[in-house]
Image (cartoon, rainbow, N blue to C red; front, side, top):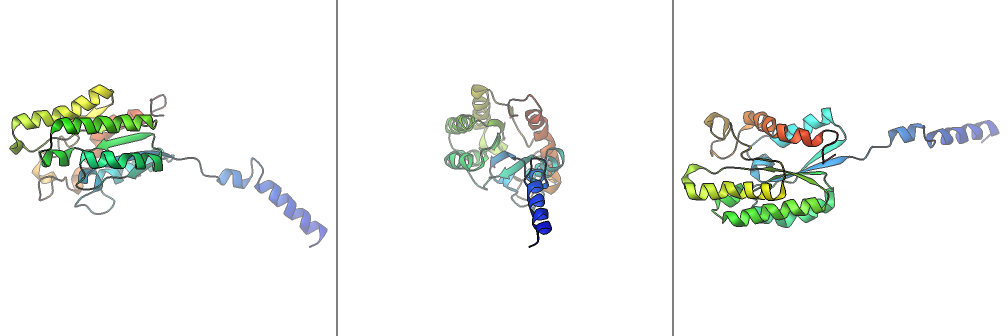
Length: 218
């Protein structure tokens, strides 16, 4: 290699690794993670890939805030106890700045004791906070055939967990959807594809403030 060629190589390497060089500009920025921990209502049960409310949230944030990624750790059929058992590993893996917690529906469908649901929700909220994550709690309601006493106790479990930890929450994130048969799948429990934008719109009203500058999750 001649002296001129060698000099050009040295200059090129110096530029590439200089603070203002192309490699410095191409370095990816750290990404912040929203972790969604839910059951079939968030896992996209019965839906085509890419149309669940979590998928819609991912696409919205890709346009509005590319530095935020959405990890969907939801599992169909999961109870609050099972989610509580999985949460520490998920926090250690993803280090989210925000946990969207949507569990409890399967506890209700199995008629598990509401106080246990409240305990599990509170434990998950506390565990997320110890990992320096904010929490948005999504509440659900049961079909009327469970009886008014159990229904009230079930709804109170979410309220108790949210109030004791002072976290933002949505009492019934399927409100306006679950009561319209046309927006539900044949099983009457899971919203269909056309309901997913409506679900996201309801969640977004509580989630968006947590993403604003100066919010505790920033």
